[in-house]
Length: 246
Figure 1: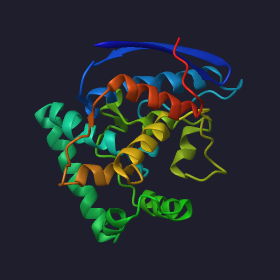
Figure 2: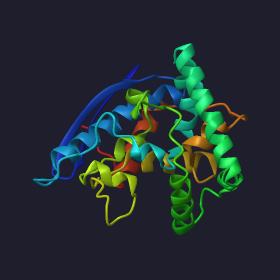
Figure 3: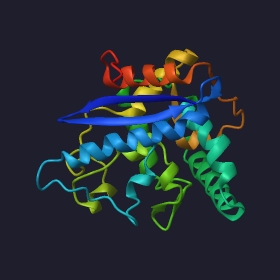
């Protein structure tokens, strides 16, 4: 294993993080847990810096946001299919598969599934927003949502971790800017990973979570020849400034 240590400036806080990665070639799915933990640390720093009176209103049993169209990196899509799903208990995995099938049936009946599958990842923001609102109106829950809580909470994608609100939880059933106030994040690990996936694959680097779970092609996860360099590139991409190890 190769150790690393770095300091990342998150707003007014210097975040010190250390860890280790494989010394040789590895799959991107082996590095995803580290990136999820890093994303969690960034969000926690943003929460600590939230203005007075802007407490996070999200919590267990509040699953309105889990009916949104969630963009995830191609690497996280592979992680969900290759690691998360196989590690679920058989009955849990069966429930998730049933909800994926139910979601596909609903989206097909509403003419949304083909549009989602054919949506160019680089589609303009207005088109993506309009499609996202149409999706939300169908009330399709995330296949991992159980009892209005995330059943894979420790393993959930970066975008899910980064979506926290300070407005009343009840407003999340009406996802409009006049009702919902997301917690501002100075950096988003989800965006950094999508950019790296885009560079590595020559694509836009992302797909929606529901289409990732429906994707029967399941291409093999990409190989990372020098994991410590990947972490360096991820940090540079995250900060959009040169990386300075300490």
